[in-house]
Image (tube, rainbow, N blue to C red; front, side):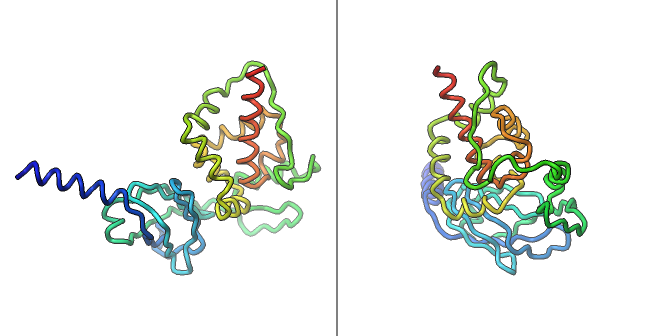
Length: 240
């Protein structure tokens, strides 16, 4: 009887994990427990995207064990797994930590400040330098600097197996995700999708001779394409 119960629970668990449905969540600030509107929510498994409404509520299609990435400017991004109880209950409260690192009210229209301290300090430092090229599309061509490459480990992390490659190709077809990335400049989503650090992104683009202005001012979709173009050029270079 005990073995039957264990077997039944196993079958139930497998059945639940295979199901997919819309689950809800409410995103609140950790300080004050206030709802956070317009937070981006991405299912990293299906690459589906949604936003929280004025009450901090979102709804997204998911399965048990899917990972959701929740981000909002001024808050620490959060990765959270869809658990069995969340899936069965259909709703959950999620709390984001306030970073309190946004710049004070400074308006310098010509610099197009983002409000993100790490990026805006670079923008101010680069203010005296003209753009090298238009930032339309990627705006740049990746010319890989051949020779000894200390970044092999980073590249291997980007495309460590065929499933990762399929995921990267799928990202380019997800219109909502692309539109979201075009409006973001914090590299958080790029790092998450490629499974590398923000510091590694800078190293890769520097190695591929991208300008400092592009590295620190291009939007996240431009950066995502640039890193992948750099990797593809690297592969061509290793075959010569």
